[in-house]
Image (tube, rainbow, N blue to C red; front, side, top):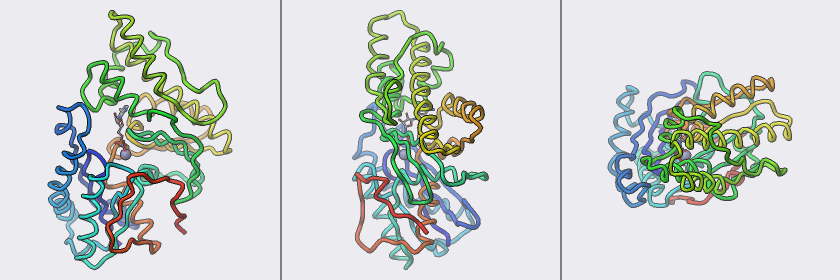
Length: 336
Ligand code: KG4
Ligand code: ZN
């Protein structure tokens, strides 16, 4: 069953064709970074308008690239939430109308389930159960995963998501949107031990995160000391986030008696996080899996994969246009 996956929850238009036996057949991503850079953040209305313009040509492009015809599509999966309502609506509308015209099923997919399953796009895939650290611009979650659709949230951010903290600190450093990758690049030239920043919530039991205090501490350090080397601040800030994320991962793995860690979502593209997690897991005798860099940030391939698994098991939406801007991962049902 060839499944078209459509991602349009925020500022990337992603489309992909996936088949459970053959794997990924083709994919394309269009990033709206240039469009929003001028405003220092995502402008929802501009995002929706751009998705509308890109969705059809990008889909035609991947169908052609895969050597297929549109009629070969046997199911359409789209991100139905969480995300920006208008942006979600563009993908839902495209998916629902295309599926109707082809006479095939359509299914709304949870964006974070897409991120969570993205490592399964790689040749070597993690076995269940595993603990997944989901770190994106809107979410920081630690999830126990016992199977597709079997998710228990172990901890989450009580305020800013990790990506959000990266982006806000980067903005104060004068770096362009989106700040995370720019801050990470600047951090490569700095000394991570230069500024002593807190590792929030580490001295308390539990698996929740809080990054807004860390962000404020970094911003205050910079305001109080105008001679501070921005690269040192970037490196110290990145180290504090990575130490905190991985400290909680170790705690979660121990609590759940699980030896496999999965890291996914935009911040999962962070090199320091990936290297430190690999070292940590090797010394603990466990394993860590991540998607390739381009599938850490938003993409259509992860939606096509999650959709294919669910469509194959017989799940599908009705004819109504369904979006869920707020949607808990735990509300999903298990795929048999
Ligand atoms: O998953 P994603 O593409 O979109 C959401 O679903 O939110 O994540 C985007 C987030 C942004 O906050 C971005 O700054 C961050 O991921 N990000 C990074 C890196 N690459 C992307 N943060 C730190 N280091 C990176 N290399
Ligand atoms: Zn995302």
